[in-house]
Image (cartoon, rainbow, N blue to C red; front, side, top):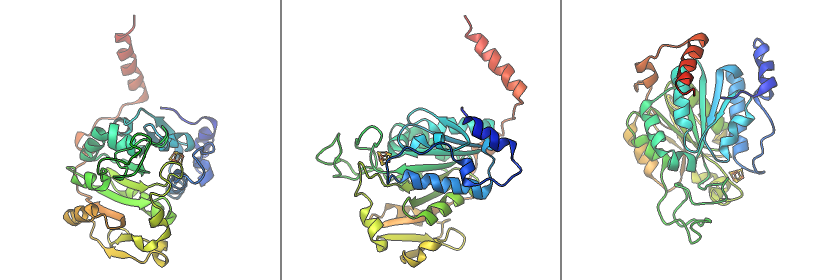
Length: 317
Ligand code: SF4
């Protein structure tokens, strides 16, 4: 795990002052102009400020892909891991350091393809981690290959006549897994909804899975164009005990009452493809959490150094 140097130290040394978004930002994000990742980063910086999370108590974990550059841009602890492996890394961190706020950022190839097995088991383990899937329907960093969420018929560099198969539905897949406890969907082009959804996921005690529909002007430029240009193409799931869409109300008028404790209805809505649905699909605050059940003892720094030393000695030549 790495920390981001001097600026983190500055935050840590002044932990009694009010931290602002700039305190949590590290380096200029180098995503393409117009990339939805910028909006997601801003929403996270806002969340860190509003919750006044200490940088030294916060970890961003990622895999490989455009969105996986996230840990480089947040002035917190960070772990830019291997392709598809963000979730087991985050699980290990949370087990050993339950006091940390752990965030996972993945792309669609990262999560739904090579990381698919980890994704399913992370849902079942239900550790207290906020996980976001930035879904642009394509492998972006590696130059436009079909991903598991590429729509059927959508051309790519690997399937130029159009994707052969129906795409994976990440919301339906998550809702179908044993012990799912928080499942939501939002979009990068509606900042207030994006922020409120992340906030709801952060406050959920358990594995919060948020799929973010993310624009990629390079490889899937028109994928969400209709939804962006036509507010009525989007429906917001609202509920008094769930999540209310706030400021979008005056533009996005299509809302539907949805009880987030109703798993069958959540699955039914997730399977429908007539329009985009944003909001909290499902929330179960009573689902068992592996980190609570297992209840690992925490170790002091000295104990950890001793154990690590013994382990390394086994391989010394
Ligand atoms: Fe964003 Fe697409 Fe550029 Fe990647 S290729 S940084 S996803 S716009």
